[in-house]
Image (cartoon, rainbow over all chains, first blue to last red; front, side, top):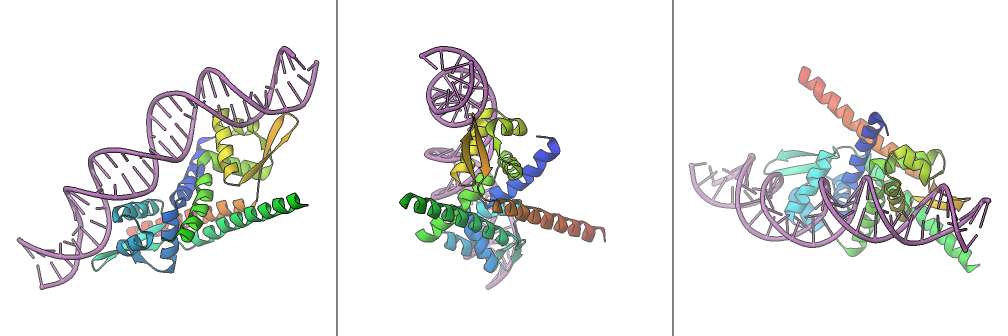
Length: 110
Length: 110
DNA sequence: TTCGTATTTGGCCATATAGCCAAATAGCTG
DNA sequence: CAGCTATTTGGCTATATGGCCAAATACGAA
């Protein structure tokens, strides 16, 4: 793998890696609905606040979310909603897998 | 997080996690062009064959690729090409980030 | 069956991740 | 300034990952 190629794939992998965690996927969907502060997300995720804070910093570091301080809260928001298309793509993959599964089952019953 | 919700997010995360590695992204693109055996992919990736074999098993386990034995080779192929749309989505995110970056730079120069 | 090629598996190590708790920090608001 | 609330950071542990090497396995062909 050449260097230029390598760094292109690394950049992509970084985005995917940041999304590749159940709690972070939940956070992304939640933020798609509306911006939220750490407190609210913590409640939603059901983990320690420090854990949620770290998840948010992963997302921020990947450029997927941004934060803004207002009053005495830090509000997090999705940086680009195209991320949701993404989840749509994942669902397509899952659906395709399910279809295959059905097909296999049917062919077994014959 | 409720149980049903949790397993939905876990299923999605599994797919993303399987893709979230530079070598695996390369493999996916390579397989999109045409099916390949481990040998060929090993050469392309530039890692130990055992390493590539393990990457392939991760992809297979996530349902992203399938394998078929022919002659004395095992050929791997993409299970659904919608995975490529996926990479397109990642590129959109990267592009959006780059745009933001440009905007910030411009506003600094003012 | 025996050889040889293709692939996977197991062992091992180094590094990364996720989680919690406790402590530190930030920054309103009185 | 002092207190309070929101958030982050550091420390620690357990587990997972990625990499290579060496060994095991699978299987077609002679």
